[in-house]
Amino acid sequence: MILNTVFFGNSLNNYFWFLFYIAFGVLVSWVLILLSRNILQKLTKHTKTKIDDIIANILAKPLPFKILIVTIFFNIGFKFLTVSQGFTNFIKGFSFVIYVFAVTLFLIKFCIGIIEEYLEVYAKKTDSKYDDQLIPLLKTLIKIIWFVVAVLLVLSNFGYNISALLAGLGIGGLAVALASKDILENFLYGVVIFVEKPFKMGDTLKTSDGLGTVEEIGIRSTRIRTFDNTLIVVPNRNLSNSAVENISERRARKENFTIRVIYSTETKKLEKAKDIIKKILVNNESVEKDTIFVAFESFGDFSLNIRVMYWITEDDYAKYLEVKDKINTNIKKEFEKQKISFALPSQTIYLEK
Image (tube, rainbow, N blue to C red; front, side, top):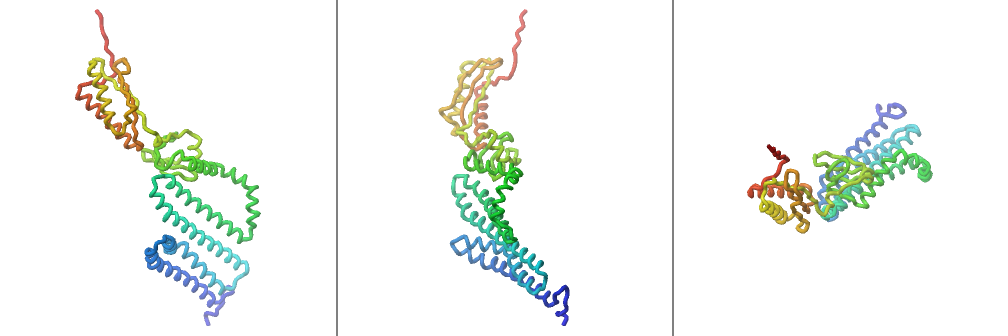
């Protein structure tokens, strides 16, 4: 029979069963994925727990489930082939790496699913933003931990002494630490930022790189969105080693400026100007009432100077600008009604005969 024809030490019959099991493995994986998508996911929606939903969602995707199933059937089919012991060992080692990769990917997706279904939902319900910035950090740490475990398992399977390897890190760790000095520094400073909480996501910061809102606090760097809508990625080391002004943590924003009116303004109108300014500030809900100062401060070179000082309590920068706009606009309107003129830089020259 033609199936008994031998090529490279194996008959066509052996190759047939080898390919059959691979194809059968692909078919089985797709059938199980379709069943998970169409049946299992629908069934889990009727249960109270979210864990079965997470597992169903993972199984409904080609990775890592498909890789695991196909590899299992590949090894079943591979038993029909006669190959050298060295090649057999290679296939076993390669298959083990695939198994570890698939299981690790599953565990990472499962742990992240737990975080998204439970911790993220809880974080959205709380007023604090620190739990929001903790979630991306947890996801990253989970990926790192499972990746390290997977690498150690693979090395152990290939005959490496893990205990000796970990002990050797004490010697080689210095070289690694020096090579990754910046990464480690930024990671440690990231931990310091998270523990000390000098700022949080959503805060408006003023740094040497500009003014903007914190979008994300990562392990290595912090992302700040400027008011020009550009994204600045600042290493955590820089934020910890330089002065950072957290504008959002201000109790209130101080306004301190001078309004100049012309010298020909009558004393009654000057008093009226001060009353107008005080009334506008007192009637504004975003202005602290006990910190309003309006005074005829000085005789300037070309104007009578009224010093105005007050505090705006709005944390949001956009609302803060709206309050300033409203106050300044109202002052100008009332001055125009009372015919109080603002002074411009000028000089009066007197000529004597």
